[in-house]
Length: 347
Picture 1 (cartoon, rainbow, N blue to C red):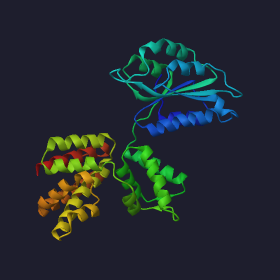
Picture 2: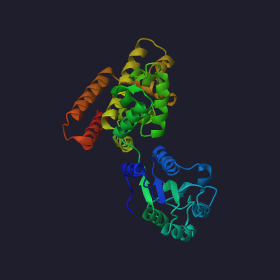
Picture 3: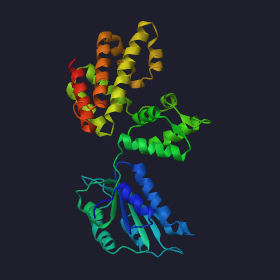
């Protein structure tokens, strides 16, 4: 059975169309867990005895046969039961598995003839699609993969969440928030809830509020990228760049973060030239503790002319991306960032 997209699953649930067996897996655990909760809420919406018709098993401490036996039970004063099977692990090596070959027979038996009065939901923390038992689950269940969201999808999620909380944020603040949080929807949701409270009574979130309250989860990777560029280690710089982009960072947002690092180098150099104590410079520049010494040593050592040239080169890349010079879309933007990194590492 071909996996459903998140949108397909949402549409089916809106129509109250429920599959007998679901498999939810992927790196984006917040949306995965939210989908499992939504399925249970909708299936049991009319049940007056929900606590008797909703059961959860963890494969960390219970065999899958217990969940299958529960799924075979009849619901109590309800049309259906919901059984959640948590912490499913089918790893590449097999060393961490809690769903194993010896479970295949009983699992196959149930999946070939699932109960019509139960909805069985497998929630996988790790699922190697090449494994035989994974293929069985994927073939016999309604599966949905929850991949990490890209930055534009994160922006869409943030806007929806803000609307639900009756709050607002301008585009600059939103993009900065996503740039700081990265591709973690759970953390993005938590940060939005925190910012919404902090923005009362106006309920308007601005750039300054985001800057003051939200720590940067991509900070260390960006500092490592800056370090590699200044050390003229092009190979390492490109490796770090690839990881950040593959993790879902939007090229234009990443360019802004790179620019921010070099801007902080420039400002740190100027503050130290004026005699400001190093500890105070680190506080003003909001430098991560483990990076302070190396960063400030670099700021003291680097020539102002080099920093000026770097900022000019970053500005040209910004224009190139926004005007689609050398190719539009994500591929064109990514190429521009890669060219910039190569040039800065060679300077």
